[in-house]
Length: 82
Image (cartoon, rainbow, N blue to C red; front, side):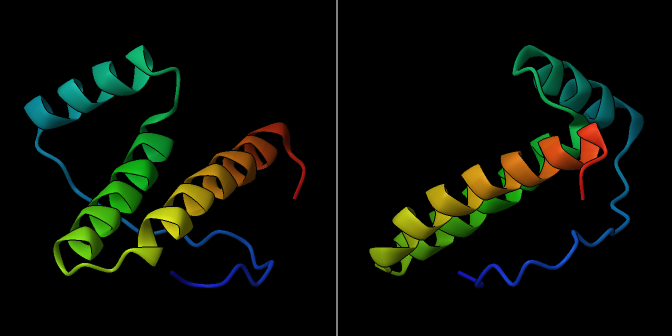
């Protein structure tokens, strides 16, 4: 898991078909998060899953911490606090 260096979040473009995007919007709304946050958390979950498959036990703890940090960072960005 990458260390938190205090840098700003980076942007990237990810393209989804219309049906998948609608499903993702609905899931994000049901979870009370933005689509961007939903995607960030999905990435962390996928990284934790693949780490688990290769028996990297330390990654689970780091992934949980990263997910918590991502939520805090995205909340700060939405609130306008960099």
